[in-house]
View 1 (cartoon, rainbow, N blue to C red):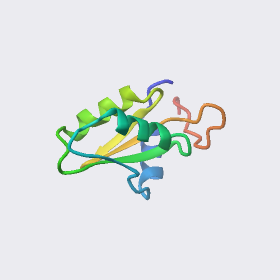
View 2 (spheres, one colour; view 1 turned 135 degrees about the horizontal axis):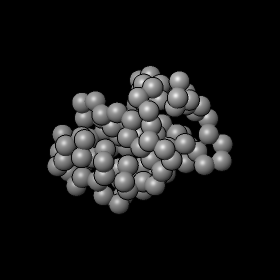
View 3 (cartoon, rainbow, N blue to C red; view 1 turned 120 degrees about the vertical axis):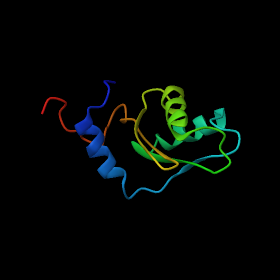
View 4 (spheres, rainbow, N blue to C red; view 1 turned 45 degrees about the horizontal axis):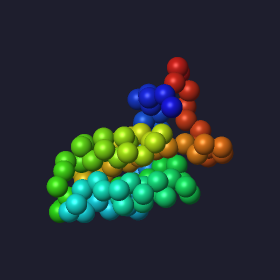
Length: 103
């Protein structure tokens, strides 16, 4: 998947505004269980929020990088506070139609 443009990121941020975090990262950081939870969440939706709890041992930007590398096809859209917004289009039937990259 191509890297998201700033216009596409803005579109996804707007869509994610009302979402609640559905995966939590605790004191052990980004574990295989966390990656499995994110992968499972992407089975039913294309845009998710992941929350770092206070006990999480890493910075939110580091967590975003680990999550997008650990879950194939996903991209970090935004980090805000202790929350990461991730996007991965559905492979067969994408519901989110991103704005065109060129304009």
